[in-house]
Image (cartoon, rainbow, N blue to C red; front, side, top):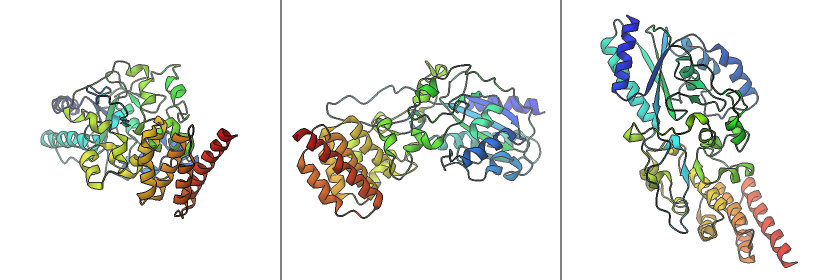
Length: 388
């Protein structure tokens, strides 16, 4: 019966727009336990993961009588078909590919809901399910690998034969016993392109990473971005695609199967200056459907300031001075002070130094005061060098 049921489920999955589906047993993920414990001990976790390690390993901790896991993958686009027109002096940021289109959490949940409803109709007996998408307890890539959807590459991402690593993953725990699909062999060989290309050295070489060093993580934090990452961020204001772009398995991969995943070029490559002062309502209306908006506007505004500094966009200086003068958030003001110093460093002037010194008098937060002091000190040093 399970084989016939699997056949029906796979056909239905294809019908409702699931690009890959696999089945695996519900035994504990023993091989992950030691890795996760060590990751936490070393401080290599991001803090966004599920907190209880046991619940990530032992399915019986989160589901009564688990028998199988159904893993699914949906392929997403890697190329934007209509980029915004280039306008002189107009600087744009960019969201990473996994945040294009409608938030993938909604898309995957919809597909899994449809699949579960279908299985409930055709499966005999009392059936139960627990669907989840990357905010759940299980490690998505580990489930997908064990279910035969692909293999975990050196960059820690699942790599599929058909779509490379440009896939969203989800899984459904169930009390239905299914025969497991075959696992896919590790396919990276001696290739280390992703490790070599990672600008922060976040990849450890065996599928693990120091999440704190990953630029994707750094773009999602709410505090100050450490200075060592700011220049490396470039103009990518959410996420990072570098380890995917350089992967040989992704060469030529560009899937356009799902209309809701297609990017709105204006939103996924937004103008940076307007983002500095965008209202909460406009932010929600413009970016609310993107996965990259989940942390709110503050991290994206901080990243927009950093991106303008990385562009060395002198025309943005008045906008940044306005942020320093009027934004109520110390971290945003401090990042803007750093950006002004970065942009004007080659051509500093005393008026900007005086402006920053006056603005500094209003600051009370230690980290923000430090940002202002460093910005002022850098500009003064540059001025002295030019005048002597």
